[in-house]
Image (cartoon, rainbow, N blue to C red; front, side, top):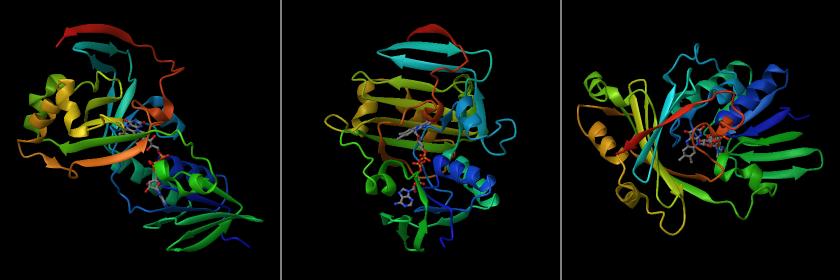
Length: 289
Ligand SMILES: Cc1cc2nc3c(=O)[nH]c(=O)nc-3n(C[C@H](O)[C@H](O)[C@H](O)COP(=O)(O)OP(=O)(O)OC[C@H]3O[C@@H](n4cnc5c(N)ncnc54)[C@H](O)[C@@H]3O)c2cc1C
């Protein structure tokens, strides 16, 4: 008999939340992830109330870094627009903390979590699914693929579109001193997005707690050239990031990092996008910068 009812491949928010729910429903899930948590995940860390509700995380009770936002600024082609809401429309979290918290929650609920366990093969058998990793070969009647861009379950079972586009990104997540946060106070109340002229990428500036996350991402392919993008966009996040990250003894949480992810990923809470959101915002033009 299989030791586990379900094998979850990938321990990001999708996999850990699915496993957590299954454990709470009385099943015995096994979760395998290549990484050892807390792991780096390139991401602005912008989550919507819907995404938090879906993961059953109460922002009031979340014990780690979190900042509520009731405003957001967009810049495109030199024009800036600010949208304000009457209550928090989004939150900023640190993915290395958030994902680890969700994984620990799953473990506490009884999920058999194996970190540093890269899945190398997934095969369909007559009586279920066989999953191979350095931690052993496991079988279960069901496997859940939550391995992100290179999910081995999706690849093995043929669920990857040939037309999938890849997003490449670079970011820096830096803890700032109180002096720097004070100096940046007028920009600390809202995240900013800088849509690039070719509409294939955007930069972001995202304060949360005492941490500033700045980054740029775009669809890969001709012109992707990440290092060149910020200067071509002529927007302020790179300058501001340099200003904020380069001085005043900030402690960088990790070195600047890059990633590739699928273009299905969207900013601003792709896991619970604003479509159909009950929250309505008020937009106003901030003039040209
Ligand atoms: C540049 C960028 C910025 C983004 N910003 C935001 C944002 O601000 N807000 C937002 O809501 N979303 C954002 N997203 C999207 C968000 O990151 C994803 O939607 C989210 O991470 C998906 O969660 P997941 O659990 O499905 O997968 P992931 O978080 O990608 O987790 C997948 C896990 O699977 C593991 N894994 C992979 N391969 C294997 C293997 N062979 N064996 C075992 N384990 C494996 C990995 O180690 C990883 O831990 C962004 C995406 C990108 C690319």
